[in-house]
Length: 129
Image 1 (cartoon, rainbow, N blue to C red):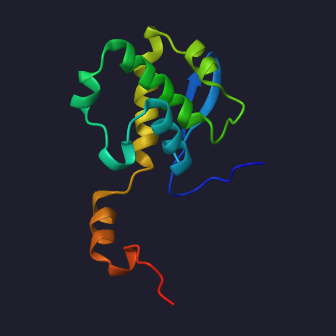
Image 2 (cartoon, rainbow, N blue to C red):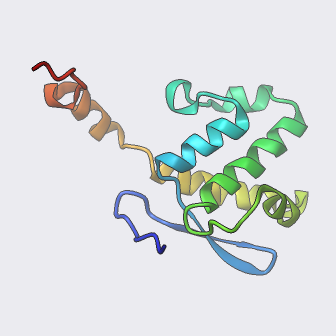
C-alpha cells in the first residue's frame, strides 16, 4: 500500500548507506518512537536538557529509534537493526538534524496550538444520548 503525501507533514529526505530515504512523523510513527524509547513524548515532550541528561549510549539509541520511527511510514520494510547499521558517529549529527527537522515539521505551530485551545469544539467531549 502506497502512503500518500500529506501537506501536514512535509517529508524530509535523508541519505543513509548511499540510499535516499524519506523521513516523516505521522502520529503512529511518534507512537512507535514512544514505544521504543519508553518515553511519553506526546504527553511530556523531550527537552534538550532531558536529552543531554541521558547517557551517551541512550542518546545514540534514541537517535537510532528517532530515525527508524521517521522511516517506517514510507519504508515499512526497514528495521531498527538496518537503521543502526547505517548510522555512524561520523554521520550521526547530520542525520539527527534531518530527523529533528522532519519531526518538528509534524508538530503544530504555536499559533495553531493556541487556536485549538481556544476553540471549544476542539475539546473532546463525551457523546450523550
